[in-house]
Length: 179
Image 1: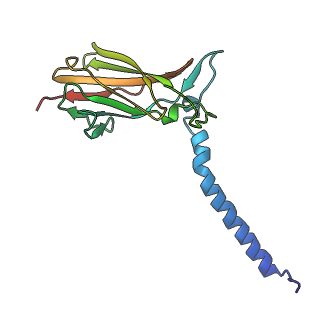
Image 2: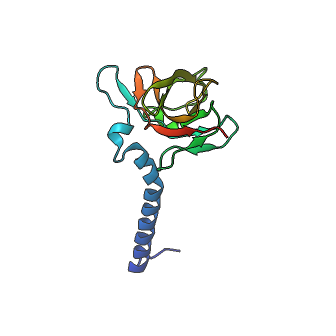
Image 3: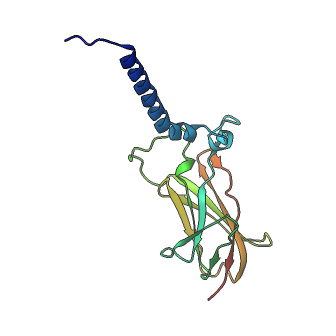
């Protein structure tokens, strides 16, 4: 049997092709916006010199009363309040891998250095600690006892990976208030 092409079947195929193209474009859009967007210059690795690369700034800085308590996200005009003098600071790092980096699970050992800074509200340094992240997805640091008292503080962090360094996160203002 021979199929005969008529204007209606050609139009139907054209509509089907357009719908398929739109569906493929919609699926690819999140991928392309992850690679390029309005903040591409600051988000992507760039070469400012032979050994200088800029990694993405860690995302979602948060603070908690301890390692098993819920986190309060920094920003949004709400200042977190913690009741512990040794709160846990954390941020998501998965966006800091340079473009084109693929983790296949064969890496061994720690991957990135993470620098935490905690200052009193007046800017006086309280704690500066550099740790090594065991993975590239998140980093946390529980402040040691005796470093903070009741009062106003702020913290931030950045990530180092060889010669690549991220920008500092925005300061996260928080209050230590004993219950």
